[in-house]
Image (cartoon, rainbow, N blue to C red):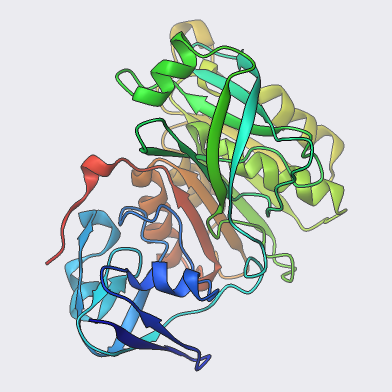
Length: 342
């Protein structure tokens, strides 16, 4: 059966059809709720059911705690109404008028810039352009219909090619293909742009970027957008990896720090090798941030990468004063992490 949903505090209303999630229906009606992975793993679409009941669907245990569930919180990307609902969440106006497209693209180049990271450059048809916000992602649609989500690593002003950073995951269908079989000039199909991970330009708060691994990709797009727009808010980038080789665009980040007086770059290695001869920061990247910042109340945080890092950053930074609505995240998740909801 269909269900009517009312959003507080905006008062907007929409109808959820059979077998639609709350998020799917809201997006269909052009009401953009915060979201990231769309499969119940990152927690970005978390909101409160004020009145009514839902089927929780499948989600990752870490994305919605038992305490949050008891307080009426759900993940809108997997919850389906079982009655009319009133929900409480903040709508995202900035992406509302950006169309989500299904497009072909041509593989322009595959640049394997490290042992396990490839930079994929994609060319759109001559008569097409993808409007997007720096930090959003696209879904590559494979021949069997399965999807793989990748953040756009370029800024909107630099859109001659769409740039993706692909980490090779052994046994990963798409990444194995990129590293072992893909050739330039091949045609792919994708859907996008997607997600609500982008710079909130209306704020003047100092920014902390926290990346792990290829979580650097959307942050790269955001920083390059900020540079192009002459946004001079104080920015700190903490980029965490196991070894020095995994900081695959270290020179670019160093260049930003050298050229921009308001930008600071702090790479952090958790398992530096002897060959690294590493003299920089070590440990977990979110702990390096905590060591430098005692009070997060004045900041905005943008965290992207491994779910454990994003979860730890959210938990510890909000405990140190970061407002809940100033933490923006994009967690790179796998469907194996999901479970049936309670």
